[in-house]
Length: 367
Image (cartoon, rainbow, N blue to C red):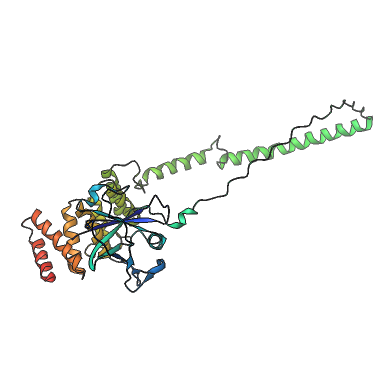
């Protein structure tokens, strides 16, 4: 029995709480447990209290009403089209917070135990996923209300006092000061003119640009024209095709981190080929340091993205995920999934000798 699983926010309980939505499970199933594993680090298993550990750990699921069959908010019915029914497992910060704290490149695998039988699936994460710390992000104390201003008090009007008449000696001193100021101003005028000319020549007066700054402005305009236009960092307002083209431009410019973000946005906008490009960033057969955001190849992450493309019917995704699962996994459930993908590819692309040979290789390993 193939199942699909996804972790989404629980709007009813707020940040730090989520729902693990499982499709393809019989609605009468009881005795549920699940094990959560990440594909990076020496402590891959999520243990009690939200800590990662080296030993496998099983989380119990409290018995409750039968699984809900309606679609979860924010998720279309087509994403789990093969499901017989949908089970919603509520989880708290001990599950959600350790996942939120991981890098977006980490892939998680959830193994569900139903009465002793195990069913693995790649746990898809609905982002943004809010951890319990979201309660305190951006919070600030409200500003205190302004104190009322006191009413103005009218001041009594004072009668003007006539100024005393200046003495003759004071008038003479004032005249001498005015004369000194006039001569000082005339002596300072050439200096002010020289400073003004220097400011004009050195482009320090924006309203009156000199010849030097005009030449520099022309040079800057020419440099701007020669500089290549950088691809956008996000796909807001773009179509799926334009977003995919922007991601490919970033990859050609050897900006793998920006390209990964744009490829993910293009996939969400409805471009399945973006999943293939993401898989090639991690695939050991196509990985390079210039075109990948990671320091080494990662076949599990590559298989995850190829599998996303295969769900939309993309043949390259079927072949890529089937090849990686067949040649790398030791899990019987994932090897069975690889056989299913390769058989679908051979049926849709008859005559592909390499794919048929890979299918035979995988069938021999499954015996």
